[in-house]
Amino acid sequence: MRAGMAAMFPALGLGLLLGLLGSLGGLGGATKVLHSLRYLHVAVSEPSLGIPQFMSVGYLDGIPFTRYDSERGRMEPLTQWIKDSADPEYWDRVTQICVGSQHVTAWNLQTVRDRYNQTRDPQTRLQVYGCDLLSDGSIHGSYRVGYDWWDYISFDLESKRFLAADNAAEATRRRWEDENEAERWTNYLGHICPEWLQKYVRYGQKELDRKEPPDVHVSGKEEHGMLILSCHAYGFYPNAIAVNWMKGDEIRDQETEWGGVVPNSDGTFHTWARIEARPEEREQYRCKVEHPGMPEPGIFAWEPTSGGNLTVVIAVSIVAAIIILAVLIGFVVWRLQSGRWDRNKYSMAPEKDGGTNGLSAAITA
Image 1 (cartoon, rainbow, N blue to C red):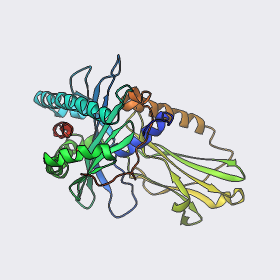
Image 2 (image 1 turned 90 degrees about the vertical axis):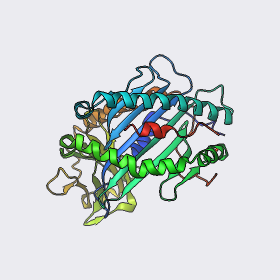
Image 3 (image 1 turned 30 degrees about the horizontal axis):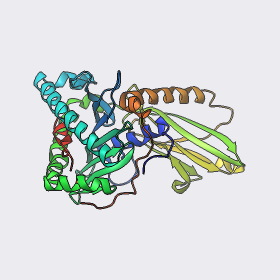
Image 4 (image 1 turned 45 degrees about the horizontal axis):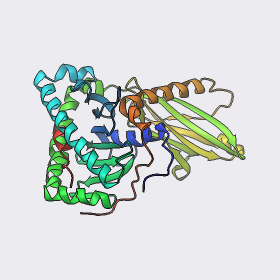
């Protein structure tokens, strides 16, 4: 079912995954994401030197702040603020939780391999879960599991039900419902996760309150008689940003293609927006950028004679993205056989694996 497709280009997987990990709120709209807490668990069926069997990374507002892997066997801080704030008992406790999750995840991975009859091929399990604090005071929680970049099962906090992506996931759903996993995840995503999110925000308040405005570059090139205009924003923090193309005074959302808000290796972010235009209408197009680090919205136009540094800037951002990829999933992407995260293939289905138990790892946090 999942064979026959070429392995995905790593950057594509990176963009999709980071979209799940980071807060997706921008400056537009009535409700914004103020802060987000996410956990990524990655497990591989065939570990090798430098490729741990299990890894867990915690993200606050899209920035990694904790990491555990099965080779080191210990949860470690990735930011100074969590290192300074958490006591030794905290690191002992979260390490024990991750060790337990490592064992359960390995069992779950083997179970799913058997169901898909893929016992000869290497397989990867991804689990992403966490919560967002919204500007209206509400909480949004999410939980998703995928195998080889395909959706497997997720949890909908509003309906308090698991959603299975295919027949193999139905057995998981039945098992988890029988074991009251929905109740546990409702409690975690709706109460425990937000409590830890607010605690971590207090710990890292000074770092989180910093504001670094974006460096904006606009470029253009002609293809097949059309002008492709690209607006790139680099080096900004926090990750809440709005990048829009305007024709005259009108924002052209329907014609704009956006890239994800992706972290750089220095803790800042980058993103882009692209639009097609008629070459003779070039001067009518402007890129509008809004960010908390800017005193007012910025309006940027393409100047064909400028932008000589754009190639260098893009190259630096690509290198930074590759570094992040290596930290997150680079060590497993090359093993993936095929597939993708498909958001539209969920079916309500009532499962037999070892339970979510990632919940215990989630309580770490």
